[in-house]
Image 1 (cartoon, rainbow, N blue to C red):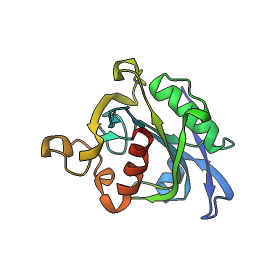
Image 2 (image 1 turned 180 degrees about the vertical axis):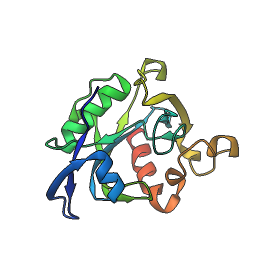
Image 3 (image 1 turned 90 degrees about the vertical axis):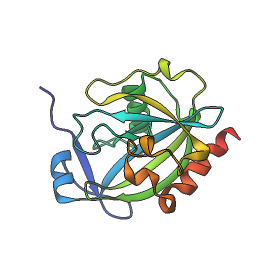
Image 4 (image 1 turned 120 degrees about the vertical axis):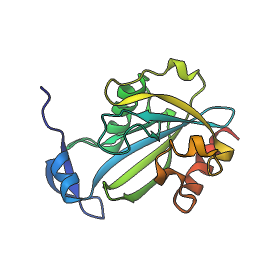
Length: 179
């Protein structure tokens, strides 16, 4: 049996003001830290991870290649490297990643400061390891058409990730890594 994940409750300036379980942080809608990486291939495809049906939020939907919480005591940098290895099997270094944005991401299910990185992935997605009970595989999405996906594919992507007002600059900056 695993111990409950503890997260730092933070203020809007990213100062720690307390520590609580992940469950309590989410139940109360408290601000906490998260990290994410969006992989892009040299030919301009994003790699999205299909979330496990066991996930509490967006089960079965496509989301960032890597995403996770920053556990109490870790830095964003430590967390993103741990999450990358857990969710893809890749041992990345900070020099492999490009900081894209740090922003406040808020939805009905989440309230966090998220640091998002881009990463150019030059291998086949078959090389990525799926984390058991967390993901159900990886999918290539054409970057240039991200906001104009066919309905069949669009309904499989987490709705918030298809909001041009929020993500146009993020996707453009990640694509710029390979242009």
